[in-house]
Image 1: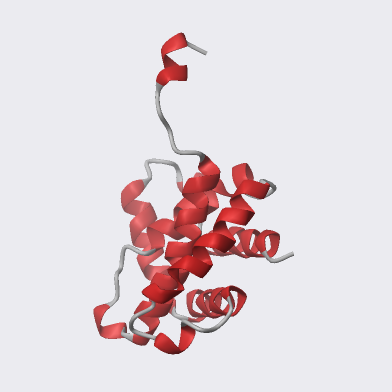
Image 2: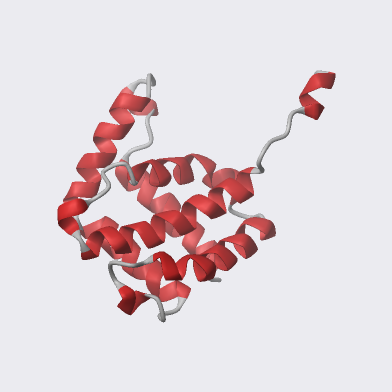
Length: 143
């Protein structure tokens, strides 16, 4: 490693993934309660989490920070206040259900990945693969 690399300040993959994980959950719940004003860019978090999954899946720091952020960010669900008092796990399960059942997220994801990636089709992380990675991270957090 080049000496200057050590001096570059970076955010850890675990911190980035935990932040994206929590952001995805509360924003999906907000969007589901207000479908006319959906944020079509939310799927970027899903894509990034799929790419980070192997790096952070087994890291205690990721799991601990994800739980902390899920709890701290609950109050940000302004469009669906009924979810604020629910457990982090319940909010996560609901967000996963929305992602699985609402085909608009799949469409948004495919458009996002197609515009973002120069990789060949077979090298791109598809929606089902990204959801599987998210489920795996959820299982790791709530073992």
